[in-house]
Amino acid sequence: MLVTTSHSQKTSHQVNVSSEIGTLRRVIVHSPDSGLGKVVPSKAQDWLFEDIVHLDTMRREEYDLYIKILLYFLDPQKVKGKISTIDAPENSRNFYKPEHPDYFNSNKVIDPQSLLSHILEDEKVRIRLLAAICAVERCSYTTQEYLTTLPSKELSKTLISGTLPDKSMIFAPIPNFIFTRDIGITINDHILLNKPAKIARTREALLTQYIFHNHPIFVHLKDKIIEIPESEHHFLLPDGEKDYKRATLEGGDVMMVSPNHLLIGLSERTSPYAVNQVIKILFEKEVVEKITVIKIPKKRDFMHIDTIFTQVKQNVWVLLGTLSREGEELEKRDFMESLQEVKPSEKLKIMQFVKGYGDKPVHYEYLEDLLDDISQNDLGCKEQTVFVYSGNNEFPFGAREQWTDSCNLLTIKEGVSIAYDRNDKTIEAFKQAGFEAIGAAELLDQFEKGTITPEEVENTIILLPSAELSRARGGSHCMSMPLLRDPIQ
Image (cartoon, rainbow, N blue to C red; front, side, top):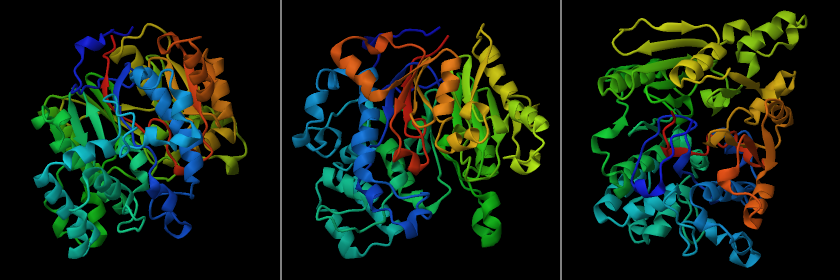
């Protein structure tokens, strides 16, 4: 049962997340910027994209709905009764642009571009940050000098999109910045700053580092911002041997599932060294008591653990069947071995470390065993644990829909999550589990008419249009960095 906390008890600077499903109060999201519209086929994979997207469709018909849904649940006065005006053609999306005077400017649904503009008002921060970015991007001295003359709002836009006010490009874009889950994770009242594995995300990490260390809403954290150190040996290793010792970790591989329990994925984007360092630091700081490491196949299909499972209620999880007990049972009955999607050698390995018990982990054979233990023992749920499988565990829909983020859901409050509308079989599985499914536009229309309120929405999957968003290979979970959730009891 949720512990209710009145808004008057909250301060705008609070940072605390102790679960995946407590009512969401503050979140960092980044609306698609012009950099996304500059991804070209020859560079798409270098910039971690499988395809190029149509930016205007992604914004107007998909992501803007995501923003309005978040605002209606987290900061309704910014949007309630205003949607027809907000989306009027003459307003040209100004409501969604952090650099524009008509920007919604919420302190509950926060764009990092807005945070960046604020810290750039500080001359010392501006000089240091520009020097760091220009060094990474190998800018000319003249370019760096010119950037110092830009107003803060224009400069923040340029540092993210790579584009100057005159539309000329001076940096490569950072199109993955819409996936704010990967820049940092809130672990109770601490922030873990992540270290992306790919060079294409270096500028994201640098901007995030400056935001969290310099913005007033995070200044009270001080010693609670955690950065992962590199191994001192890393710098001395030959290039071919550096990967093993690199400290790389992305937020899609980190989940806070209960106040004392953190999950970390060991994936193609998160290294063993980084996982080891995070365990060591969090145990020493007594931030959590239990950390479970989930080693997943190093395949582009999976990327992070939040692409194969997320949580919707205390006792409800959505997951990929082929990496589970259910998948193994299906394989035993499947005589067409050539059609098996995942070989046994590619399955998960799950190890749980408990503070004070040294390096002797508890092993789980199946993902369902771990998730059931979290529901029943960590969260004290009295109801049976329910598993909703990607594609309703029907071949080939499980893999097809997992690719388009059927398992990557953001839970706004317990039992209410945001998903993509294209994953029909997974939506069918949710309905069979007792959930309703409704399109985001239809729900917003009901909110505007007053036929239902966000507080009345229960056991519902909110469906975003996703033709373009799904091309970017990230769902609503990826596109969010929660800063504050209500505790669950």
